[in-house]
Length: 240
Image (cartoon, rainbow, N blue to C red; front, top):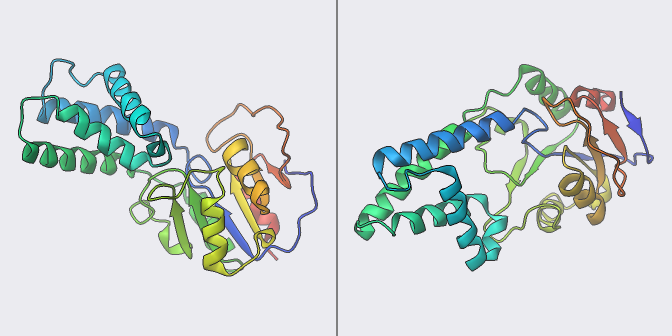
């Protein structure tokens, strides 16, 4: 069921969050983290055995030292990995080599996503009538999961771009498109990052609630979206 809260204005571009909007990202992240830590114990055995709790405590220390890394999931992982490896009796060259191996292993599993055919078909249909862009806080590789060709471009947080709901990626998207924000419809599952973030910058917002693959709806929010979707396929109503 699609609910309308605010009248949609003219839409010239549709922006997508990726994780939990076009596919269920939760099991992917859990598996990627598990495989990453298991792999690190194999190539760099340690007394802490790369337990998840230990890893999270190390990550917290890095974020306390460099709070800006909270907006860059890739750099925060890489810096945490280097910091953890540097506490072992190995050379800096070994630290660099093991860090590269670990990050490559994580990325393989992080991007080992099978996007549902229904989502691929939706992107294909929409892309024939609207330019599509991506604005994501995550670090999935769009080319590896088979969706890159449907988008004009995809922005990820990091490298100086703060995570949604910060306006950085919305502003950069408008700059690249040479388009006013009110002509962009941003679609996402996160009430704060996607709905508030988009509306706060002046974009239109479509809230997928619940997120892809989930059954429990989120509670009402103070910043209303223009439309609320219970199924991502309801975006087909935007097709001429």
